[in-house]
Length: 133
Image 1 (cartoon, rainbow, N blue to C red):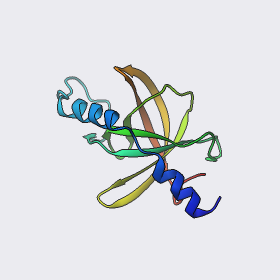
Image 2: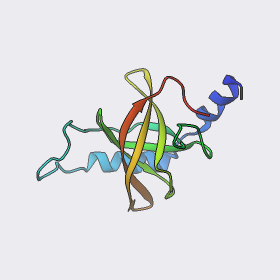
Image 3: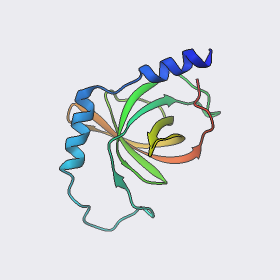
Image 4: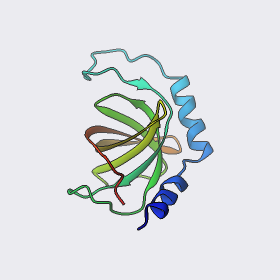
């Protein structure tokens, strides 16, 4: 697969306007967490479009990339919204923050229904130099 074709596939994986608007409402209407915080790092509520790629145990791509949208992000984890339930345990995630392209591997910890979409939480376990294809 040529880099140009690979980049075309990644660039074509965009979340729907409805998903982005849904997550923006979730972030806007979020109430502060009350209770004992289990996280060691503060999570930041933010809406970012992300390209997600399912990975096998050796970090090789399986299946086609798909769009997700972040709801919250910390150095150790990410919460994101997606259209369909999936059975992947590991994802490569690519997004841009502060004009810098970020590529990480995240292990999916949980999924739940969230209205018309699904919400998942994942632990970031590695940084990537290149996005798997």
